[in-house]
Each structure stands twice: as structure tokens, then as C-alpha cells.
Length: 636
Ligand code: FEO
Ligand code: CA
Ligand code: CA
Image 1 (tube, rainbow, N blue to C red):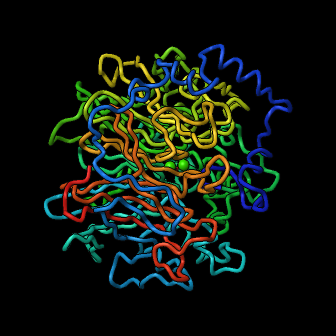
Image 2: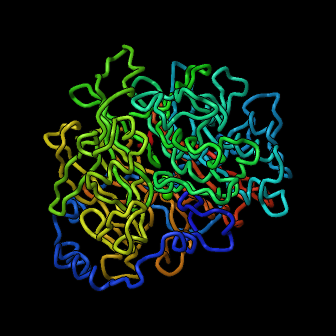
């Protein structure tokens, strides 16, 4: 299965597959009338009947995706062939190196990574975290500060020294908590290679125990008050930080995703509230065992603790003494990333996906406006939150989330129970919105809808219907797609937009219907489960995948997870990189001179079949790699 964070599967059910657990928790209707769903989709849009009909649905597929690229390609590299090697493959003329890997010490008094023990609590607190995901490089003069999310740990790897691959004592739990969060690390380049600057004053580990401020409408709300913080204005830690964002005022945005899997109940008879269940919080954790040493994670004792997670957190990478700020104004859900654009009016507009099957796509518009060189530290403190409604005719609307539209008591409550608010206004259930990225050349925004096996099969966790329709046109969506939308009048603050699909991923060597993918998917560039997404400064779209690496059946010929580049104008897509075995490719940022591209390699060997990057019999380790051209030229 793809990765732990994609499911709500406690380890008590480890003998079940992830999908089997999911179905047990929320079984589909006894009779799934597949034919009825297909028929409805066909009659509505003439879509699922095959590729000819896909091509005929011009309002759905972007013009570029339907038009063969006749102009000279802007993708000036030799495509990489799919493969299942246990290494990185990049185009001819490019090379790569590891910059920072799980367990690498950030200070000289910390030990090097121990292959036998895989670290202790004390060593992990001084080292690069595990399972790196979103990241951003900040440069000030000659200093380069890399802020990197450390999303989670694979228990079978981080506790592979234990008989059953689970934490066994308090120090194991301490190590696990320290492997999560954010690593802020100075790096430097010499002779074309990047390295960690040990003992840099900027180096910092933010973990599941670091003090945070709670800001915005929900600050001080009763739902955020706990035994540890009766004021509801502070919290400890951030974890399961997935994608990221960055602001033009030099701060890093880290996004809390599957925060639920760390909570459990010591009282087996405890019944979590409906609101907690909507966020997947239950009586069993995913095996992290944090509640065994920290009562914050015991929901039968501290039922409000999960309400302090699921936010966007703003961090100043240049001030290691600063307290990270949880920005409740941007809503609480399983945040993927946070794409911030400054609109022509000066407002900060942040687009955000909620990565769960049938959840929603959101937009925040700041009340204040950006001031170049001024004090923007409170710009994400307050603003308008809305959620996307996509119509089948290629139009859409951002629906405001206010007490009036949702029937909820206050904006604070909306910012805490955001999923419930979005359900109340009838937002469009999506195929797991992952990263969002805005085209730097025009008012146009893209989002990866990674996959959704429940599309057209059963409702989301809130009971909202998930018909195969609009930007989510295929039932049992195995492969995923990328939707893009154009704000009305080119104004990101506008309520209206139009949309189409940039690509429907698929396998044209296996299928001849809509599951073959759109016309810009071929046997040479096919992929599944687009996840990471970022425009470079020239306007090319970099696509990272987190999908099946089975390389058989529906996925035959796709190989390991990979990174591709797309041209938004022509629809052309070309494979740039293939990752090692059982990894996900995620996280992307460039050096200021655009000569280095940093990419994240997460959980190589999650099923036990990789020794990347060390080779031999070494423990597989997530890492950040740097890619450069042999000739030192620009990338992207
Ligand atoms: Fe952490 Fe949605 O991936
Ligand atoms: Ca992701
Ligand atoms: Ca994913």
C-alpha cells in the first residue's frame, strides 16, 4: 500500500490490508450499482464511454490537453524511462547527491546515524527528522536555510531494531516524537555539492513537543482549552506535517495533515464525538504509542487535544527563538499544502487541499494587504475562508464559510470544525486534494487530485455524496487527475472561476476507456497518483507521485514513483526522475540561482525492499537530494 498517512488504520489491524481496514470502518452500500453510476455519468457528460468521448468533452479537458504539441517542446531534457531500480534516475546530463537524510546530526556533538539502533530519543532530537516531505529554501545573502517537514515515521523502519517493529519503551516514544515535525537546517554549496552546516545558529528541530502559539479566530475558544493549557491559546508540537507553503515575507508554512493517528483512549469504552470521528480520531492510534508517555494523546482524558492540530503553522526560519504560530483562520482539516499568492489588490490568497477521500478544496483571503518590506506578521491572522463548488459546466464558485452560511455559532467554531462547515454549504467532494500550485505567468491554479477508490461508491466521512462528476469524473478513481481553475477576471479574491482538467492519469497500455487517461498520457510518460506539485519560475509544472509501485496490472509499466514536468500551454508531460524502490517523491524547492533543484525522497523501502541511499545492507532512509546539471546550467 502507498503510505501510512493515506488511511486511518490502527496497528491493531495490521494483519489487514489498509484498504480492508478502511472498508471495515466504513463499508460501502450492500449493493453498488456500478452500471447506474456509469450510465448517469455518460448521459450527463458523455465522458466515461471511452477516449473518444473524453476528447469530446472539451469543457472538461483543457484545450491544451486535447491538442498535440506542435510547437517546439519547452521540456528540454531526455525523458527518463520507467524503472524499478533501487536508486535515483535523472536525465542524461544531470546528477544528484544526498543533502540530508533521516538521522543526520545537525550539531557536532550529536552522534552519526546508528545503523543498529536507528537512533535514540536524545540523538533524534539533534538530528534531521524522518520521512521528509514539503520544504522550502530561504536565502539571505550567502546563507541558505532549508526548512523541511518531517511527516511521520515508518514503524517497521524506525523501530526495525525491535522484535515486532514497534516502540517498546519511553525512549522509543521520545525518539518517535522527535522524528516528527520540522527540521530547519543551514546548508552550503561548495564545488557543486550541498552539505549541512553543523552547529549553524539557524539549525533547529521543531518536534511534537515544541511550544506553539494558537492565533486567529479560534484562539482561546472553549474547544481548544485543555488541562495543559486552560487558556486555549497555546499548544505543544506539530506532527504529520505534509506539504508546505512559503510567504513573500520570508516565513515557512507547514501543514498538519493526518494528526489523528497519534491519539488513543485508555478507556476502551470511550465514545469520541461525531466531530472527532469526522477527523478520523478514534480510540486506537496507528502504533506510535504516544499516549503511553504523554496524556495529551489520551482522548478519554483530553478530548480537546486533537482540536489543537490540523492547522497551518507559520515559522520564521531566520529566528530560531521564535514561537511557531498556528493559523486557525486558515481552517482545520487534513492540510496538504498552502499555496500563497498576492493578488493584484495586495491580499494574501491561500489555496489549500484537504487530503482525504471526498473532502474539499479551500481558499483563504486575508483581511489585510501585503506591504513590501513592511510588517506582515499578522497577515494570516484573519480573513475570509471559503470552499470550492465545481459545476459540471466548467464553472465554479467559492462558497463563503460564515456563521450565516453554515449555521454554526461563530467563526471560531468554523475554524475548528471546518469540515463540518464545508459540508453544511454543499461544497464539492473531491478525489483527495493534494498539493496546489499557482502558475506564475497567469491567474491559473492547479491541484493534484491523487486518487479515490470510493468515488461513486460511498459517501465521505460526513455523509456527503461522491458522484462521479465534474472534476472527479471517474468512479473508483485509481489513477488521479490534475484540475486547474481560472479565477473570474484574473482576480484570486473573486468568488467565481472556470475550470478544466490538465490531465487524467491512466494506463493506455492496459485500458482503452477513460482509465487509459487523457490524450497527453502515453505509454512513455504514464504515472499514477499525482501528489506533490510546483511551478518553477518559468511556468513549467513539476509533478511528483505517491502511488502504486506494483508495476503490474493497472500499474504495469509505470515503475517506481516518479517526478514529471508538464507544460501548461501545450499539455505535454515528460518524465524527469524515477525514485528508488517503495519511495514517494515529494517536496520540491530551488536554489535562488535555479542551478540546483532539491527533491524529497520519502520512505524508500516502506515494505522492506530498499537500501536507499546507503546501499549494501543498510537501513533505508528518507532524504533530500540535490539535482544539478553537469554543465552547471539552469534547471526550470
Ligand atoms: Fe501527506 Fe496527502 O500526503
Ligand atoms: Ca502528499
Ligand atoms: Ca499522497
